[in-house]
Each structure stands twice: as structure tokens, then as C-alpha cells.
Image (cartoon, rainbow, N blue to C red; front, top):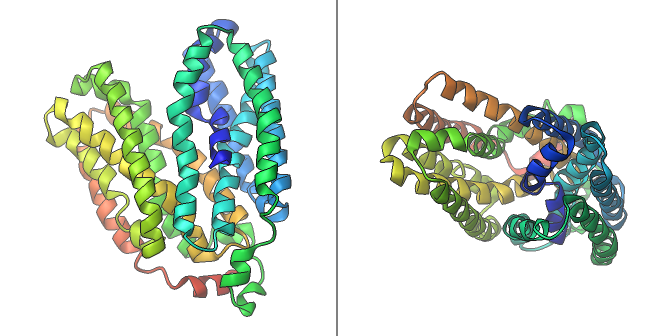
Length: 392
């Protein structure tokens, strides 16, 4: 949870708080800032294809210290940037280490070292993300009223180095080896050859799960980026949109709390069949309900699905493939998630520009949420069989 909390420094909501300062300081247009940010994000996402596997090769305490040092260095580079192009390497490092690796290590730790109640442990990781979203925006806004934006980034770098490094190193010290593999995998499975990264893209189970777990981040990113256009269509006030985000955060926290317990009782695969439905119903309400009333079910439905997906998309890989290569597998998933979220806003923007109605968009999302999980999830076999087939 603390690793996920420190990842906030590289998350979109944190960096976005400084957008106006970046534009004013470096004479950047909205488009230029977007290009810099998207470039840093795409490069960091591609890097996760290979760097995610570090969680399998290094001890957790060494990996977390390395990532925190990179995160602190990135924050320091942002604080001393003298031009827009000098801002790029700093943004790349905080996106890679923060949005990418820190949350990744938190999820890997929960999946690998939680011998019991793994679902609840993974839910705890999601609480770190939610806590950061709730606490940092008002804290940063208050701080910017008193200090220059460079001071804030330098302070963030110092806190990461002086507090984050020793704290997370101390918390990670007892987490050694792979106790889940020792307790849950039979000797024949433990001796199975490791799966190459390229073989993962040919694994039908991995690909079928992707058709479900990649949808929430793509859908939510697209809707939030185009919230202005949707608000104009629906005639929502900015105050109500802000309150909608509060509802989204509350629903996300509630769903994350519940999903951890449901996964422990049933399985991540069982929940995978239904997790897209709340978001789909929420989007459909944009076209079915009166504009003033449609805001609340949309934000609530998106929050429920986001909370469910945050935990399920972490637990499902352990159920299907075990923990021996959890870092590599989740690193590939994280990279694909970053790349796909860059495409979602383009697709939705094209639909809105073409005049496609919100009812039609919502109906398409609902059909997908019902049909695709029905076709994908039931065909997934037992996790023990999957682990035994990894090296084939």
C-alpha cells in the first residue's frame, strides 16, 4: 500500500496539477505539453515490457530501493528543468518509476507473499492508489499557494529519498524467496520451464483475459479525457462534475474493499465475468436518462468497475500462471495497458466528432460487457493445468 502511495508522484492526477505552471514556465501550448507527456508515457510503457521482470530477478528490497532512487531522481530533474525538452527526461523517469514500477512492485509483493487472503492483500495495494488520489491534489494545491512549483517537486524528491527509501527497504526486508510457490505449487510444476515473453503473446488464456481487463482503463481514460465534451452535451455544471469524481472515488474504494473478500471466497475468474457490467450500465445511462440525472450512475458505475478491475487484474495472473514469473507477466500487462489507454481517447473523440449518440456508444459498451466475458472466461481451464503448460 505504501509503495502504491509513493507511486502517486508519477501518476497523471499528480503531474496534471502542474500543467499550468509547465505551460507558463516553458511557453508551451496545450498541444506541446500533451506531446511531451504522451511521449514520456509511451516510452515508459514500452520499457515496462522488459523492466517489469526485474521483480522476478531482484530481491524485493533491492528492487524497491532502485525504483525509489529513479523516482527521486526524476522528481529532481523536473524541479531543475530549464526548458520543455529538459522536462522530458524527468517526466519519463517519474512515469516509469512512479506510475509504472512502484505500483507494479506493490502488486507483485501482495500476490507473491500473501499466503492467505491474497485478494484482501491486493485490495490493500489499491487503497494506496486511492489514498494518493484523495490526499495529494488538495495538499499540492495548498502548497502551491505558498511555494514555487519547483520547490514542490524538489520536496517530493527529498521525501522519496529520505522517507520512502528507508521505510520501504525496512518493510521489504522480511519478504524474501517465493513462499507462495513453495506452498502452492507441486514439485513438477515448480520445475516446469519458464515461459518466454514472446510465448505469452501466443498464450490464448492471456489474450482472452486481456479482452476484459484492458477495457476499464481504456474506457475510463477516454471518458475522463473527453469529460468536457460530454458535459457540454449533457449540460452538466463543473460543480456537479467535481462531485461526480468524489462519487467515483468512493465507489472505487468500496468495490476494491469488497472484491478482495470476494476473490478470497470465490476466485478472480468468477468476478471477471461481471466486472464490466457496472461501467457499461453507467455509460448506457448517458443516453437513457435525463442529462442531469445521468452523471451520477455514470461516475458510480465507472468507480465500481475501476475498483473491481484494480484488484481482479492483479489476482487473475496469479490464479492462471502462478507467481514464478509474476513480475514479467504483470509487466507486459502494464505496458499493454499504457499503450491501449493512449488509443481509447482517440477512438472516443472520433465517435463524438462523427456525431455518434451517447445512447449508441453506451449500447455498444453494454453488448461488449455482456458478450465478450461470456465467451472468454468460461473457456479458461484450471490454473494448475495452465502453470504446467507454461513452458510448452
